[in-house]
Image (cartoon, rainbow, N blue to C red; front, side, top):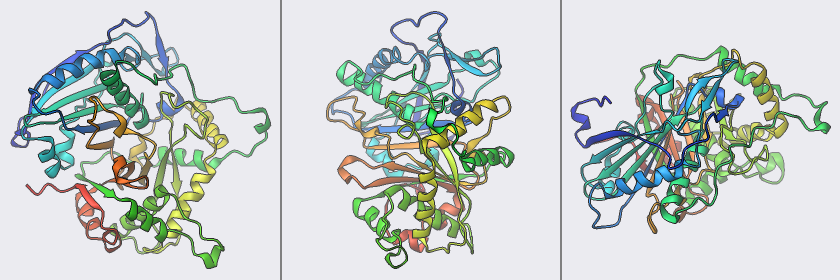
Length: 457
């Protein structure tokens, strides 16, 4: 294993990399097929970091040893996580569930987790979540990685990364929750469902429906206009919007009563997405209208899938800015709502079927389009993942890579104690634009707390 050696790595010492397997062997010959939505995400990856405080008096290395044991127990219920990719007769990816294992990196960091969080930035944080790109010997490439970084003065960071081909952020969160439950309870109350699949057969009463072509056209456009990954330096800013801040944003984004009668209040996601769409358009110098944006939504509830469904179910769709000006958050929020309302089960099934029929040539870098990407991750529940009684995560960060050329916005739940409407927003932009965003008047009017930004050390 190669770790870059430079001064910026001085706070972290990498101890070893090992392979962790499940405690029970997998049934020989078992394979796991991938869906059309899985295959559409082949070139993307998910990286997550959970930060925890640890009980006082623990020796450094003690927590890592215990988690190394419980992850093996958890992996017994996730055979596709420990498997390896291979091509089937049609040339499509499938997972051979051969229990080849998950790569685990063990590391140590100076100071405490609290001190780390005071100065963390994107570059430092990504050193806590190991990743290796696919290499030519695909059979030996691990599709999932875990990094355990214990802080010498207390605390641990659990980094988890995987190819988006096999799991979206909802699934990745599910794995960590299962690991935490196994560690805390000795069992997994909600095991994953690998036998469940995406719906492909349309209900009888829907045979003569009008296809929702806007969604399909967006995926076609993403393929036709996919842009190569650049060397642009990106900065990620994590922002906490409290209950009152989100309420204020929803109030600002409501529709004009005189124009529509009874005011329509947007959801927290619609309001915050509208706010950042507007602010980022201003930052990028847009004088008329807003920049192109794609929203990314979890479709499990829309498709009636069980909460334990394991696989990709995040769908992208375009939202057009029209002739909005730089202050009309209400129009931006309503445009987002209009697109979301049209993404019903029939429209999603239209997309899935189109992807299935075009799977031989459809492989698009969903982060590589020329849109700002805004992803709704409000339904993830990272703060329920407790590995020890009374020790919930103090902070959780999500990264979906590579970042779109125009940037990325992830809207996440905040810790429960912050209130039901509170949200954490992670914004990733080119560095110069991130600086401008932090000075934007509209953005500053809400006074969000900056959890992660520019490292001033």
